[in-house]
Length: 255
Ligand code: ADP
Image (cartoon, rainbow, N blue to C red; front, side):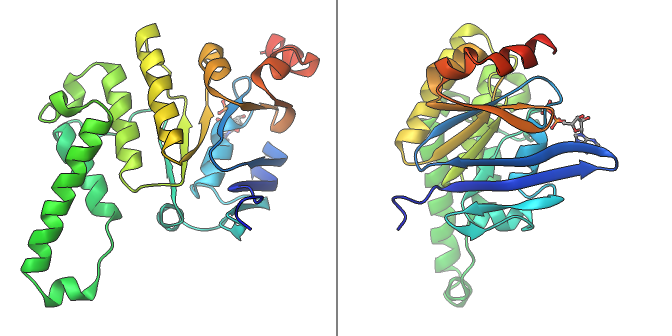
């Protein structure tokens, strides 16, 4: 049953780039409603793992399962239909469009097309448009972006741009959200707001996995943390457990 089954299962994932083993038999499971942190020194394989989970890279070995279904090898657009969304280390917003239009693009992409909507055109099309705009307004409100709706993201503070990117990822109503270094470049107050947003996302029923260097954020936000070093999992546990782990301390000293 869905209660005891983890949402995300990563089984013996390997990823090789020519001679370089970026991931070596990485296994981990993430339960429903968890906020999981992935930490590790630079080059330990964190982003490669995200790229495998989200279908950007095909693993050299192993499997990824969501809800017990094998999803590794699926293309990213397929995975978004399975309920997976992600953000990137570097912001990927349309800098010239308004904030609202950035969200509308994502909402439009995630809608399902049904033949009856064309049969009943134009009523169906008009209704759909109204629904899209309503959902954009909901997202703006939910992520505290209403006052920036007509601004171009490029003109806004970095912390707001991060929030827009998270709002955009949430447009497809994912079950699993992957955040790649969401606190990078944020100031203390922005990090605090980010933590609140991530908690509210989780409280709405979405499972969150985040790569993060900001240990303060990881400590306050994550129930469990998985530590990667040299492409392998070297520790996993509560934030307090992993920061006291000798293998983890050594891996970071070598960084
Ligand atoms: P992290 O996110 O933990 O900093 P990465 O996953 O970015 O680590 O990188 C892990 C290793 O894989 C590094 O040695 C990196 O140079 C290598 N790597 C990552 N992506 C590629 C790629 N597309 N081609 C070749 N090597 C890569």
